[in-house]
Length: 222
Length: 222
DNA sequence: ACATTTCTGTTGTTTATACAACAAAAATAA
DNA sequence: TTATTTTTGTTGTATAAACAACAGAAATGT
Image 1 (spheres, rainbow over the protein chains, first blue to last red):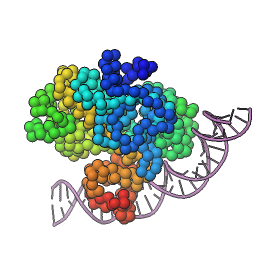
Image 2: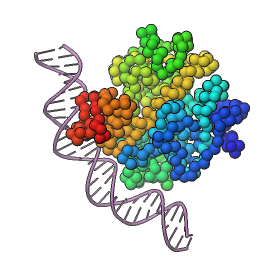
Image 3: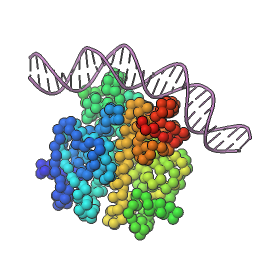
Image 4: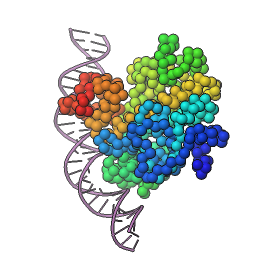
């Protein structure tokens, strides 16, 4: 736990807390670290989520298997992100998503329910926490809207350009790495991988983008 | 204001508050009611949102005009829903969506920023409020994931069946009214209206669904 | 009650994408 | 190093959806 202490302290979940508050909270929360291998399921559809999961290392895909068997990647999370936070608040609602470790992953697990039932939201550190969680959830919300915009484009070309421009804006640079391999990007944008590869080449030939593996650069014209 | 008092008191935003707390809060928030005609913009892309908007009457579409001019309906809100709540918390972020009155609409407007700067989150009623907002945002989050599932289906048929089953589950009934007309539903699912109409007829002929105007019934086979 | 506008369903044509099959390149294991 | 597996790019074909154009129904206004 100590190895990650500074990282935890600087995470958005615990933003603005003193060392005393944080250590108290970690105890109150019964905090522990769990490891997951690549491909392991951290959360399954149907689970009832009562813990806060804070990613300390690795990346996690939020996925859903459609009724007809196709995989949908809702979003990809990485260090300092929370997994399935929205389901913690809605206590009696089951998770409708899977969380799958995309790489080997370490997660800080906090028993939210236990803590809140003990202090009845009365302690100051809980007040800071809920404020932070509110902020985090707001940002997640905005991200989801962004994703809806990405996948709502009508052509493969527009999906790619929208996605890449949004990434560029987020990183504040026209050159950046994307966190997906081709198949995962296709599952994220809900398009066929080979058709996507073809369109990427076309965009490169037209000079709109340049890429090599996961490194992408947008030309000024995009 | 008095006309809506009970409705406001029972809305999720103010859930669990005493009359005293609520009245104090409404004053602190500088609460007022605004009316919008059908088609009017309540929020525009680029706006900085500092108010909480609670719908008292009517329905509101959250939309986005894509870069290439096509309309996307992200979601539709109705009585007791909040508009663009996620942008209130992220103070320095501009709205990336439009909120458009789909019918004549009345909205309770609360100056969130003013209130929080005055009481510095110290008063109990603010504590209750932020808890409520956290719950609301969680539910919105889950709704957005649901919408992503809807639009991520690969065929018009699957989009319709997924959307309709999800609606049925939400209303806990195989018969229900949908809040969209055909064009809006098409914009919500990101598909062509006429192709969608065609597919609806087909589903009806096959006996999977029955519908008349906005009333839909799912057969047991769906 | 009639005229006018909006909404919905139907059809044919064009176009884009999924799908399958494969080759080349890269990564991994032996 | 060589062999094996995984990932990525390319092509042709079948299919599904967009688009356009229109007709009938429903809603609205006068």
